[in-house]
Image (cartoon, rainbow, N blue to C red; front, side, top):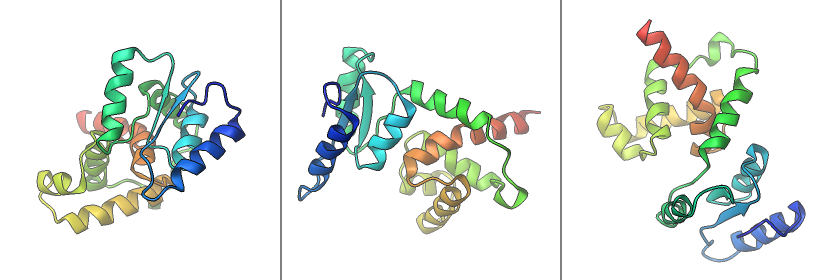
Length: 165
């Protein structure tokens, strides 16, 4: 779906129509520019991907294939913007601190691994991974795995630098 010639409201309405289909259609929004807020809005309305016209043709084709295969695509530039935005947020309180196990789960989610693979690699039950994901989502105020990957970027970086020091 292209939001290039549509207003924000029109694009939202078109996306809502796609999501009302039974079964819902996998969708990716093509936008004018990499915009973190627009990407969040598109994903929260049910889009499975967001990409801008600045992406190269090959990246666009690979992103389409990834979304068609069940993935969620967000441009790296949006992830970097999210990380910069998190850097200016106040630090989380101690009770919201991410544990080492949760950090390992965040890193695996950021790599696009499903719960079954995360469970195998971290030697835990799949149901335990699900519990960790729920706790992580609550602590990071994330609504889905994509937001965990975005918001967990800074957490993962902080955890990596803490372990190397």
